[in-house]
Structures are given as C-alpha cells and as structure tokens.
Amino acid sequence: MKLIFLIGLLTQALFADSLDRRVEQLHDVIISIDTHNDFAMNYAFPGMETTVAKGQVSFELMKEGRLDGAFFAAYQAQGPCTEEGHVQAKFLADSMLLSLHRYAAEHEHLGAVAYSVEDVMALKAQRKAAMLLSIENAYCMGEDISLVEHYYNLGVRMVGLTHNGDNCIADAATDTTRTHGGLSPFGRQVIEEMNRLGMIVDVSHASREACLQSVEWSKTPIMASHSGVYALKPIPRNLTDKEIIAIAEKDGLIQISIGRYFLSTLPRAEVGIPHLIEHINYVVDLVGIDHVGIGSDFDGGGGIVGVEDMGKMKAITRALLEEGYSPREIGKLWGDNVLRLLEAARKYAESF
Ligand SMILES: [Zn+2]
Image (cartoon, rainbow, N blue to C red; front, side, top):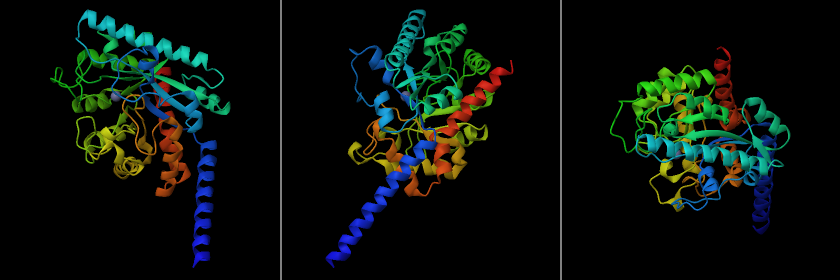
C-alpha cells in the first residue's frame, strides 16, 4: 500500500516536472504580451495616493514570468472637459510617457520601448522585455486633433478612448450621462487619425454604443485591452455577446483582465486561475481563439490567487495546457493575436 502511494507521488512529481518543462519550452518559442497595466502613474508620480496594489509590474518580473511584452498605459482619471482640465490631463499623460521612456533607458539591459512587431521580435531574440506604450483615456487629447500624432510620436501604439466618465471623444461604460450617444464627431475624427497613423483603438472603459460604433468606424481591428465577459459577470465594464461578436467579426480582440472585479463576485481570496480560464473559454466558444488574450490590469487593480504579479504569468500557460489548449492556440492567445492587430494597424497606415 505504502509502495503504491510512493509510486503515485513520484508519478505526480514527474508529471508536474514535465508540465513545467513544457511551459518553459513553449515560452521559448511563443510571444507573450499583456495588453494593459497601470505601472506608469505610480512610477511618474510616486507620492500619489492609491487604493490598489502596486509593484506587480517590472522588467524583472516580466523575465521571471516569461512575459515578452506588455502595453504600459499612461492613464488619467476623467476630470472636467474644460481647457484647464485638458491641459492638466495632457501634462499627466506626457509626464507618464516620458517616465516610461526613462524607465526603459535605465533598464536597457532588461528591455526597451517597442514600436512595431519587428521590435517585439528583435527584443525577444535578445531575451529582453518589450515595452509597448498606450494611453488609457484620450481625455489628454482634449479637442485638439494634432495631439493624436503628438502621442504617436511619443511611441503610443494603442489608445483607450475613455476611462470612467464621458470625455470629448466618447461615452464611458461607467459614470456616464450618455453625452454623445456613443462616439462624438470629434471622437470619429480621432479614430480616423489613429487609423492614418497606425494606432490600435482600445474600447475597454467605453460605453456599449461607443464600442459598437468604434468597431464600425475604425478601418482596422479594435481591441478591448482589459475587460471580461458580461454573461459571466454582469457589470458595465464587461462585454456583452453582441460586443464580443461585433469586435471579432472585424478581426478584433477581447483581452481578459486578471482581476476579481472583472471575473467573479466571490471574495478576492477565492478568485483564481479557474475563473480567468472560464472567461477565456467563453470567448473562445463564442468567437474562437483568434479573438482572445490577456490584459492584466496589474498596478491598477489586477491580480488573482496564483497570478499575483507579472512574475506568475507562466501559471496561466500551465493552466491552458491542462485545459487542453494546443501550443499553437496558446501562442495565438498569448501574443500572435496582438501582433496581428499591431501589424494590421501599421499596414493600413502605410497605405496613405
Ligand atoms: Zn482600466
């Protein structure tokens, strides 16, 4: 009896070891990209009060978790849509983007800012982290269309239209008064300009109307960089089947957030990888593996049991293998889908 027990333990250990090895081998060949974190705010303004955990994001943690790339967002909370409010928002976004460039320069032995698919691939070959830049809340553009190019020139390749609350560009999913009934005329111009330059439109935080109108208006596939599935957790920030299908039909992406807020109503201590997998499976069943990925929201409220920071990302890969996803499917989910959107945005821009 004892012997059988020992053999059982040994088999278990060997199996676990081989699964860990498969995870490592898989990460040697795939590209993994997380499409949202809020590292920048705290890094640029370390004295700022915050209600969420920080320290979940760094190049060191990316290396530990075998995460090849991540979109680092310059976030601003929504304030009044006045000239003064817009000046302040631009100051915050500019400061955060410059801080991110400084972070990359100071950690050049570990990573660098990436502007294209080629940059991500080259950094992967050097075993370095790729820092992709994004904006969370186009409030910083105020009503000045020239600022789209200003942010492109600062390296931004994806722009989230809103945060909590409507701005001059679009209505938000939360704290909204349906100012525009979706996108404003200026918001449509901003999307046209983003298409012209080669930036991805991000509809996480946008209202349902703004999301569906963005799908229609954008010439290139759009992304929800950090959201969840409404059918599994009905909150305004999560996407309905209608939105998921609309985004996917235009070849876009639904990136599931690694946060209790999006995934489950259970207490924080009880929300873990199975809940994340449940949301991923739902999107896969509805629209397929080509339209799903991961957007952690680390340093902005993200983190679940088993994936507390970027250093733990491999646990997701392990769970996906256990769930029966093939290496090719995991490659798509982790990064190929994101690279496809980056490339589509650039290709379209090159046609001008
Ligand atoms: Zn967010």
